[in-house]
Amino acid sequence: MTKYIIRRVLWGIALLFLVSALTFVIFYLMPSADPAQLRAGRQPNPALVASIRHHLGLDKPWYVQYYRYMKGLVLHFDFGYSFTNNISVKQQIFSRLPATVSLALGAAVVWLTIGIVVGTISAIRRRSAFDRATMGGALVAISAPPYWLGLLALFLFASDIGKIKLFPGAGSYVPLTQDPGKWFTSLIMPWLVLAASFAAIYARLLRANLIEVMSEDYIRTARAKGLSERRVILRHGIRAAITPVVSAAGVDIGVLLGGVILVEAVFNIPGIGRLVFESIQNADLPMIQGTVLVGAFFIVVCNLIVDVLYAFIDPRVRYT
Image (cartoon, rainbow, N blue to C red):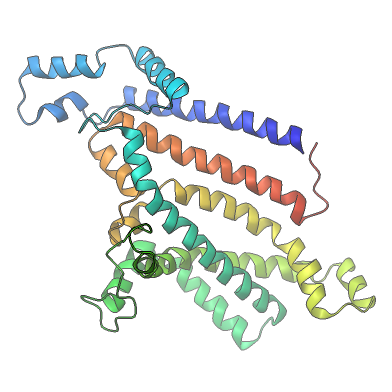
């Protein structure tokens, strides 16, 4: 297990270098705008633009720029400074990261809880009224885009414009360190909106896997030995059926931590997703590079955690 983890960590580091190189090359070869001109303002003096390009190092070959960037990142954990406002990229990312982490991890807890509970009950009570209602509702949840569902939820339940006003804190994010109570209430609706489609997908996935597992020979053997139905389901059925769910959760959580742009925009949450959008609009290479690397880092870490969990969830999995 230790050798496997070391190999995965080394591959993860290599992948992060590859992601940074591809991002840098794509931005250099296919620029959407000149950062120097954006910083100089409207109808800038060519001399001013040239001066800004020299100051930012944009007049150097792309491989020289990349070398300088990676040197600062590897030796000093320095993501550079924004081309737009000359603010530290690391400072910007880490100031917005708690909001995105709060949104993504909270939504993950909600969708995993709902998905596992609903999927298990639907598989055990197949073709029942509960099964038909939840699986029909799952199709609706999967088909509803998060930004549309978020706008609808704000219209119906937000404090200012809502008709029912169940979630008074929605639309005004409060940091956890400022007020834990308001932080929680401000994120209830975003969690539910972001978790809706994922919970539906996971419920259907677990239901299908659990139905198949419950017909296996070792399940019949466990029942023949006199084990209670609850223990058969929890200890043998779900443990075998949940492996694909854990795999999907690792990827989904990693992607969400990289930036949930639409949900953050709808609920006015100052997270990584909005920072990515603003950086792309301003052709801010250091900010784009930093946010992409942070997103890739979370995806690599989440996949590593999932692979390690496999060995504990499924005894048939062994790493060498």
